[in-house]
Length: 322
Length: 288
Image 1 (tube, each protein chain N blue to C red):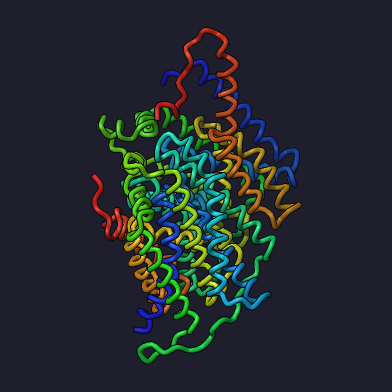
Image 2: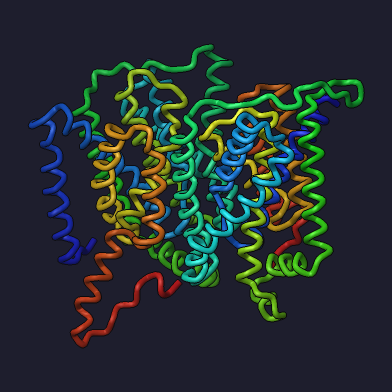
């Protein structure tokens, strides 16, 4: 595998950043760790979301469904299996659900996909609640582990790194190249012999699998898992906002949205707990009307603008080719 | 039999909401995910008119529908028109309109939570018995169904027997060709969006007479309406009505026979069947 100089530098900077982030629990175990944990959680979720929704431009709202399945895998299996195995199972179950949803909707136009994922978390929640009441006559599950917040934080950080490396490997692979063509022009992709539906399904499964694993890792944070908390639809919407706010053209784009928005949501939920909906609504409107390509997209535009003075061929933005 | 009648009564009001959405999506090409919030807002206004001024909800429609028409028209002109103009293709408009109407969804939901609180609300209107085929049903449900039929018939007359309605349908079939035969597509799209909002508000007013509602309920209705629209075929009036009745019956059947907590699962089962076998809708023609 040959690496360009940029890639080597990105890798080194990334490794340093991860190492620095990993030391955080040594300094603080309270408020800052809690908020950093949220950041790492959403970093993993948003990056995994972007793996699929970035190149395809399909707005997936299935995050809460995958996340909840992961949480439930841990809740149900903790008495029988070691935790790492459950994280893998949680990811696998989520990937299977992603495969089924993808098989039903990704063969036809993208709108059907959005509509289907729109209610998916609620659907899975209804089924899980129904089965739970039928089979075990209780609404929730206890999750007792020896993990504290710092362990969860480290595991999520590791997961984020895995998601990043996977995303980077995908971008270098034939799959990534094919996805780029699909994102630019699906008709062209189909005519050059790319099995567009199959690739989209594969990518959606990878993305969903990681989200399921994140849900599984987070399960020990709640000692009691209930359907409404595990399948909270807000997770889906927050992931969409943070990812789009950062920008989905680059793998690290969502991070730029995750960090400020986690802080904003933290402040809002403490100071104005009843107005979270309004803040989320405004965030969506800001993204659509002011930052259609996210913060990173806007920065790139400004960068390109400032270099325009030089006699250089202007790079064609990705959207232009669509 | 009881299931079928209850289901049809329920489906009648779903149909109005779905007709509103199918006009907005089929003609204006805006996937309005804030549609359910229009419905909930109409519920609250009907409640407020009834409890404060003892206005019969059926007369209330005469106020609520025009207001909803104007509000939706303003939303289209101010917020959605710029998206239509900047979109380079249908896909971009879809993504943009989905995100923008998500914004509206949460904004309106948040404002309604502020204004009315999160509690479940209902009022008593025509809570008498009404006999159909030897079984008793709530009179308010029957009246709501009858009113929905009248409004839907009015819409049918407008769309199929007036020049303007024909223009609206032409835009639904193909905006580019409609433009070529001298139809003002932008105006027809704005009209359809506003009309769709008004229809949804009528549906909301009728639903409020027999349903317990709260400020964050809109999403569920949007979801159902979306699925009805897809089942019936986008922009297809007859398809939406049939699909709404099927959904009403299926939901009632599942709630009665298996578990009331699984109504969404019933909706999804139907949705999946449609996606797998007739993605173009019940009456839709196969697209080339």
